[in-house]
Amino acid sequence: MRPPQPPTGAGLDFSRLHDLDYRKSIMQGHAMRSEFYRAQTPVTDEVYDAVYSDVIRGSGGCMFSGTQRIGKTHCSYVVFDRLAQDIPGIALEYVVAKDEMGRKYSDFCMHMLGAFGHATEVRRKFTNWERLIIDHVRTACLNSECKIFFMVVDEAQRLRIEQYRHLFNLSNALAAAGHRLATILFAQKRSMSHLMMQGFERDQIEISGRFFVRPLVFRGIRTEKELESLLDQYDAHLFYPINAQGWCYTRFYACDRFDEGWRLSHEASAFWTALEGAAGVIGELSEDSVGFGMNWIVRAIHYYLTDELMSGEATYDDEERWKTAIKETANVALLAA
Image (cartoon, rainbow, N blue to C red; front, side):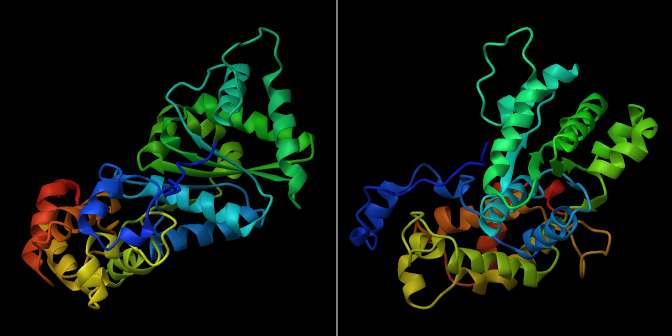
């Protein structure tokens, strides 16, 4: 399974993109709220560097935990895409954990195989699902120079202690077949304490040593410089329509202003000040803060670009407009943690 993929933009008349009415007509709903674009930020870079150094070099699995709406799912997409790009032929799967993925080992293997994209609807009583997964991994590794099978798992807090035991057994089965399982888990912050309540301490050495070699706390945007880096993505690296080079998101939603030299990254100071005010932050964020949640930041950016700029009503460097964008889109109580 792969994360959501971007639309191709096929059939569009790129020569008409300077026409505001045409741009509005080709928007796919509220396009900026889709999960198709991948913003590279200092946060995603830090996570990817940890994945590359700890998992690819053989240290084992890692888990990133954080509060809700902090940007973990988006980061899991970025990690998946960058691994696929940086390591041609990599054996890689993306899994969204479910609340019930099978109490029995055979059921767990069946659910995992289904997550890999195999048809498992017609279940045969005596099917060896473990063997099918091993065959899947062996086939996936044929085009790879290494025998490591990478699995990015989002919503890992849904896995129960039984599923981690099953995953441990599956890892052993793959090792016996000559392959290593490397897991990259993204979970809500409560997941570890939840496991401890289930008697996780009995399996702590084995399971932690296999899947939580380096538990890391996932953070949001913590400085104005990081926010500026995120805004710059909309100015130079993220395009809409997806294959319209030269039409970054900022230009698509504010064509005239963009062509005059204005950039969304110029708004970093005003946006940051509005974020601090909305969250009641005095001075710099504390060292133990996880920062401003990416979900709320991105929603405010979407509102500013679409409801303000594309409507032609917003002014340059208008902090009040950012205050409005935050008020209309963010849960202020959860804005900063």
